[in-house]
Image 1 (cartoon, rainbow, N blue to C red):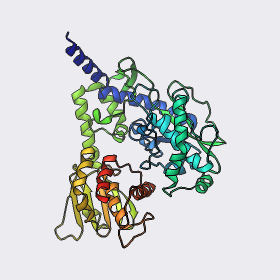
Image 2 (cartoon, rainbow, N blue to C red):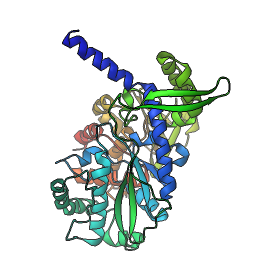
Image 3 (spheres, rainbow, N blue to C red):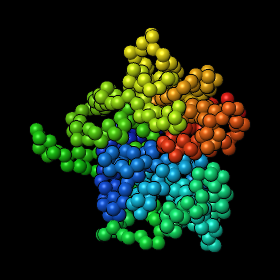
Image 4 (tube, rainbow, N blue to C red):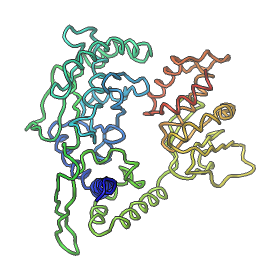
Length: 448
């Protein structure tokens, strides 16, 4: 066998190991560990989007979080003002803590989001409340994973990050202290292989943020697992599969339009089909689930930002006649369109064929000026995620027609990166959004 043939053979083997079949089996296996963690701590589960969503059944999700590993990468540490996650504060208070679920495929025990990004987030909030701490500026990290040198480097940045957050004007020292009744926020960590408490622990001095890793560390192709399946026709069968660490990561590469909600909605049926269908049949079955879901789902998930501006997610073709409260509907979608349009309608509808990916974000730039002129009266902006293009386009109206307190103004305000940050932060108070860097660049280019 030549070197080239050997390389091709190895890639094919890895592809088979990381197949959709093995990934789904692995996700369901890891989800059992997540349930054990939740029962042991008796705290709400918060999957970290996007990977963490796959490991937590919808009825067990209290909410979701947006903490990116890139904000914790070595020498690139940051506190993202695009992903504030302040919607978690009330949940932490109501439940005296929470569990954030994530995983990684990078041959590590823990993703940077859990080992560094979230600890930085906790430290910044603590620093705003209590100021400097002589030992670590309230920055706690898992010592077995993060080196002392890296920890010290992060500690020095906490005051800088805290100042950036305070400048947004969304939270203050007094409000946070009052909210948390003088307690500080403390990250803790749990991952497969560690012992769980026999009884839910009581945390009196601090509010715990438990960072839970869904997957155990394993090399591809080195761990074979077996699962008993009960089939009414054939009785008990044994499913054998190759375990994939962080199987849910990079779902675009393997999911064939399967989503976390579809996975859990059809869990039992899907497990059976994993055994009786070949790979091509399995993919066809999964794609059928996607079509079925789209047909049955509602059209939009709308959140009002101001009296005359709303944003939402589109999951099917839109019938404007069901949204007559809006004078203008702007649809940013390549997949969906308007239906049942009436020629005599006073309502204005505009569609831009933009996909929910980086290409769509870049193409947005060509349409920004036109879109900006189409807001008139009560306006609704929809995109395929509800978290990327639509909130970014809403910034066009917010930054040019409102001040940073969202009070209407007669003259267009001066727009800077700082004012855009403040408007985005206020959107985050209303809805969990996460516009990509490429999307925001398209908006910023026009506004500034």
